[in-house]
Image 1 (cartoon, rainbow, N blue to C red):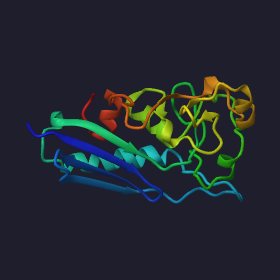
Image 2 (image 1 turned 180 degrees about the vertical axis):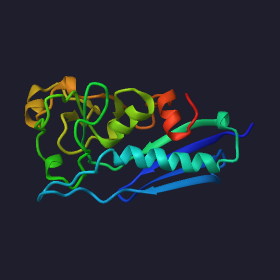
Image 3 (image 1 turned 120 degrees about the vertical axis):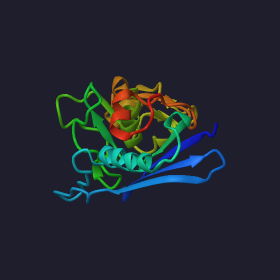
Length: 199
């Protein structure tokens, strides 16, 4: 049986999805451009609506429609998203507001909730991970800048002053895993949206 891997690259201009065989050969691809950033005021740079997820799901569908193999032979999905973005989520994992671009001034400042229903503060990869797997977890590698993270241990800080300085509560932060560790498995809902196989 041939085994395949899917790479999801959500970049600043487009979402690209590539299916590779186990030797690294490209067997299918999909690409969907991102919409222009929403910039209603100086210092505000947002990804409109649910553009990051919508572009990833659409690019996955294009790649999977072109995939010549059996989806059951896909053994893994790798995810890379735009770094330094901030995603603010409700308790059900939906966006409480548009994802803030790395260019948004709020990303470089302590967090201030703009809605009453904020449950989680995470990165774009934490948000996309939830959409793909249903889990509230993320790789520690994406937490640079204004986050209460201990970069010696790559875990959330034990210092209360770190939370006061970043404006985030510990219960608003997702579970962290080391780079390369499994984030979860593709849910039935995500499979329906992307064409990726469940699990």
